[in-house]
Length: 338
Ligand code: ADP
Image (cartoon, rainbow, N blue to C red; front, top):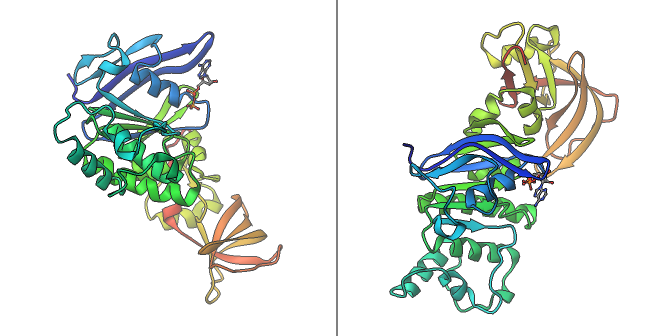
């Protein structure tokens, strides 16, 4: 018997479409797991099946060792939060948060505590129509946590917000989940959000889980080229090739000849001071200026076109040949045979 959520070999079908194709996943008590994958890979279907909103065509869902397959949605003790917080327009903020709280006793104190937790202390009497998008989602989170659900299911909770706000809220969301010890499953197509919020990330593709790991492990050791490409690794080179030699040196460990080294953006950094005749050379294709850095598309012999990083505001003409240094933090080694 396992504590927490156990999904065993779950299958969800819509007519002839198999949206979830045999998923097995364990979420431990207090753990936050992100289901990450491109649109249409079956994330929401899996979440909805866990919630009881979608019937399973195979497999089962259990919580704390008890199957919930025959338990209706509202009896599972799971909380739900969606992209659009679906607040009640006719209730004020406090009224929205209080909704679903069982006991009338100290309800007001609990509402205050929850609003404080989500960074909205004093917002209780505000009509929800006066809130910004980010504030609405904070209220939706407080409302979802109000009944102290034994599992919180979040479906793209930040997707409707603009990027800067999303990044800030992702940090706050994690802090709230950790502070409340909430066991949670978060659906997102945004890698940064998954990495910011979750203890473990489950990469999903075409109805299946490809890899489930802690963010750092997923980034450093993607199990397959498919996972690496999804995470943004943009070039792949055999460890035994001449071009891989400086990469293997930077990794400072022994690789098998048939291992593959994957390069993410920033695997090369444009060397600014002093010449080094042995440096890797990259021929500039184009430069994009970003906040805090420039991204330089360069052709590197034997590797292909990759994105090297340079100081903010750097400008290089196409065709310029630049010396590059390797940043091992943007490299991963894929197991042989993939
Ligand atoms: P994601 O959440 O990863 O974007 P979904 O779970 O929404 O993916 O969808 C997975 C697959 O199931 C897609 O091919 C989608 O078109 C299909 N699908 C989802 N919901 C329904 C539905 N209610 N009826 C028919 N097909 C659906």
